[in-house]
Length: 207
Image (cartoon, rainbow, N blue to C red; front, side, top):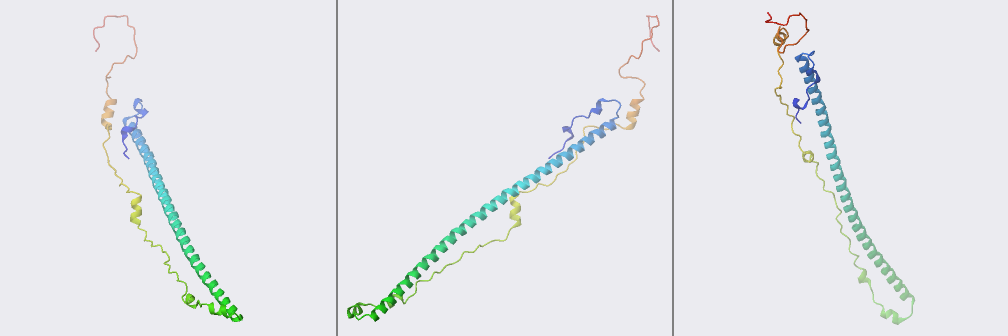
């Protein structure tokens, strides 16, 4: 942001002969300083508001990423649970079949029917091997260290403050020049003070 005295209107004191040139300049400089302070405050507030907005945008993006990762974890959990329940069903089915075989053997031991005994075929080999065990690799979050420099890049760079001085378009008269101007006996433009009737109309000269 640049500050220029040209943005200011001439102070009202410049049209009043009661005020000296120094007073006019002091008034103008005071107005310039006041405007510069106001502009600087507004610009600083705008920069802070922009930073806050950028922070809010990044916060929303982070929340979105976290929610997406949580959704992925929910999907993985569902897949894991489904696989475990499927394995559980296989084991329960095998146990029920083993119980049924044991019950059949007990029935054969209690029967006198030789035909049933001769038809029986052992199923021990079927249950010699246990159901396959699940080999599951649980997921992990491979997080990285937070890089502060990378975060700073998301906020952009802050340009350095530049302060320059420029010559004013007005020069304050020296006290000697102003006092000599006030002591001049003649006016630039003649001014009529009063009219004295003398009764004589032929005026040749005034000494």
